[in-house]
Image (cartoon, rainbow, N blue to C red):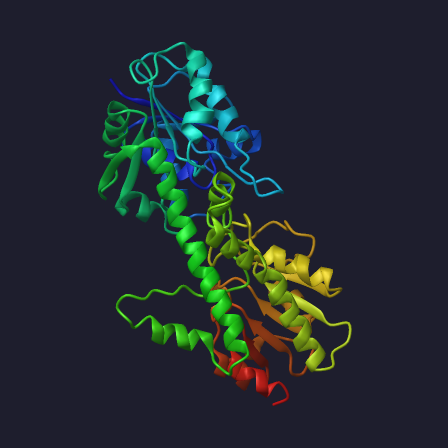
Amino acid sequence: MEKKLCVVGLGYIGLPTAVMFANSGLQVHGVDRNEHVVQLINNKQLHIEENGLQERLEKAVDVGHFQAWTTPVEADVYIIAVPSPINPDNTANLEFIRAATASIVPFVKKGALVILESTVPPKTVENIMLPELRKTELIIGEELFVSHSPERVIPGKIFEELVNNDRIVGGINAKSAEMTKDLYEVFVKGTIHLTDATTAELVKVMENTYRDVNIAFANELAKIAEGIDVDIWEAIKFANFHPRVNIHTPGPGVGGHCIAVDPWFLVELAPEKADIIKKARLTNDGMPMYTAKRAERLLQEYNIENGKVAVLGLAFKGNVDDMRESPSTKVIDSLQQLGLDVVSFDPHIKELQHSTQVATLEEAVGTADLLLLTTDHDQFKDLNPADLQTKQPRPILLDTKNALDADAWEQAEYRFFKLGDGKKEGQLYK
């Protein structure tokens, strides 16, 4: 008998996961509460950008293995892949998890498996999902099986990593974990490691928190380097030649749904113990204003009054269209708080989604005194500065990602600076 899956949440993780299972021969019923998203998917159109997703979606729909709806159905397996954001006070908002779990309760049958893929604080399965699932009146662990298998993929390489990355599976009991392992083995080539649900929850949050703390360290180093005539990008490169050192890179802040969010789960869980984690989060959250002030200082140093800044990039990372928790938007907010006029452009954000956004690069660059690169899209790396029509004869460019060729831009008469480059601090009037 063909196994039927119901995937709740058809966003950046849920949709690729759904089509992956559909193209592996399973019957998949996708669920999203957004009717427009459902309509687009069933018409084989995308509402998100991901390499390889279009052709995989077309195949899944054409062979009849995947269709999207706004409500769940009876299935053998349920995968919940909905957001788990933070509230304004940095506490976890688990209402999407609770609501998604509640939505499947009327359809769950004896022997079903429920898998949470969303990244969540430890104890979410135990404290949020299981109370809802007990409403099925099935015996948890005997008649209804539950596990947590967090995604471990990066936007732009989701399908490659879905297949090749190791996977963590945490079950509420051994049978739940084994059932989940058996399911994912239809396409996962990496090792599938089994544990309990709470350990799996903590592992995923730990992974993202490690990266956040490392980035905060790099950002502090960048600030130090600016005061001692050192280019931090060069220094980090040399330090990483050490076989046991892997320092991440600085930037205008940390974005994405995971790294900028998940550490707060641990701070909320144990506020009196998570000192380093909280400090790192605050350091990274402070980088957008630090970046904005650096841009403001450059305008002042060159005596440009009422300067206008063109922010290049709105996505949280290069070559994706994902704006969730993007530091670029926070940099814009900070620039505006400082009283600066701002325009923005992103080649991957097709529809205008930000109040400062313009439709073309030419419009952004042509009206600005300072160009501020916040996202390292390939389109920006490949730019020929000589082709750009600028407002100033010698415009300022601040590269926060070390993505551009300084020599090429300086030859084109740009005043080129990098975040964390102290070697340029004494050359402002060159």
